[in-house]
Length: 497
Ligand SMILES: [Zn+2]
Ligand SMILES: [Zn+2]
Image (tube, rainbow, N blue to C red; front, side, top):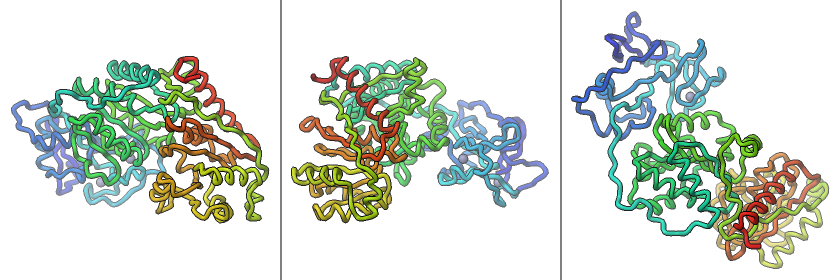
């Protein structure tokens, strides 16, 4: 869009008089009119824009109305693309890589206009796009008499971590919660969320995966029954809902700006958050300058682990599961060149033996493979043992049904790629990894995979076997992480011995 700058105020121009108007990215400093307290603002616009950075296409209001709010100081315009030392940076996603920008003949500014390809799926940000935000008062939300409806009890390990999270949230600090798989980390957040909401702070729980948003939403709504909660993911209906409590994918954070007093990032180590810089940028942008940031993970990366050890990162651990039994420690079993076996439609004898044993004893198991073709090669071989065996991977359209069938115990054995490394809980299973030496099995993937076993208090044990053709550093690191956590759990009296 082109603007006309006059008397410290911007005016959008539709008729593209090129002599007197310029695209927003070329205006050196965007003037911000002072707040006119006599102006009657539109409360719907307030609800929609508070803590957001939206483009015109996102807004069901006319440009005239938005402009009126800007002229009276209630709305802000920011440049969609900033030029820093002559180089473009996308204000929404932080992209500054040249090959992620492209040009198009733009009807809004009448020029060849630069746009960001990185966040294009959220609507086009170009050099003439204003990012629209709110500068007026925050919406008032009334609090219910009691905020937290959850009446459960925390384990000692959860309680200690919960106290640390409350402190970090109250003091606007950063904290990493390093909790083993099955520790019950969601409940650990409840006291801190309650404390923040009581102070009328805005809280966001963000996670890279939509599955997790869908799983967390009902649990949080049940825990905070009188609080409006917005659940945001691609295609969600609640995109425009203003809520004190937001549960969102990290992608959705791209629409927020200085919104939250507390951001809780769940599964920081999960794809795509770890590889997409724009999502990490989005999480930072969505925070208010004075705010708390809580990171949750069972498997922090190497760098973070080092920062924890050397005192550079504040952290708290929950080394034991809520049922007070130790984590299953993976066993390493050499199985030779298993891929060569597969080429001849065979599996190594010890692998077959392990699987047969499970089928005979009616013990369900997850069997992980590094790649889909190898898994699909193994499937018919194993179906000779039991025709009900299934295999699942990320693009499998029947993925959900198969997981459900496994839960219903209709499947004795489920073959899977790393897609099921996290997020799924079956109460009583053993776990095997075939080809644990493959690069795809990082130490954190292997810790997560091992974490699938022994989850339930009725069946706290489970066998985890890594079949390999040569031990890797990742396998050793994963096993070490698990044993270190078990030792800490015993030392702190969180595991029955
Ligand atoms: Zn962008
Ligand atoms: Zn343009």
